[in-house]
Length: 185
Image (tube, rainbow, N blue to C red):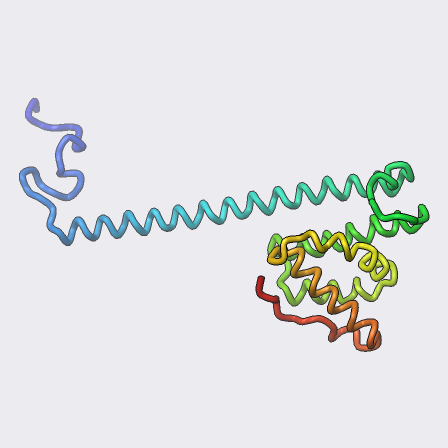
């Protein structure tokens, strides 16, 4: 028994190669391919996990923003501090805060993959029909100019600009305004 090796890791027998033998080039290549596939799979899973964590963080941030909006809508003093839009009555300020939260929720749904571009456009078509949103959108036009042109927020903003303009031309055809295809960045 003293000559028996109870720990097979001490020789190559556990790897399918007998002591004194070497692996063929085919065996080395095959093993390397398996390792590469495993590494690719792990990278894919890690990328998906990072995306999910990012989405969870965005959802949490949106929850914080909604909680702040709710506090601002409940307290006129906080509402004044929430928006930089001038000359709004308390009622208008609360409406603007609310409609901004609605818009943000729709965009977030698209950002985290809950809805596609055409669904985003569909939800925004309905929102754009609201006169409060139309007023909010016009008042915040200058704010959107500071967005990076290739950002999602800027692309959505340009799509809403088109919808608002088309609705002003023909409000009866609201279900066809805007482009159902996502613009390139």
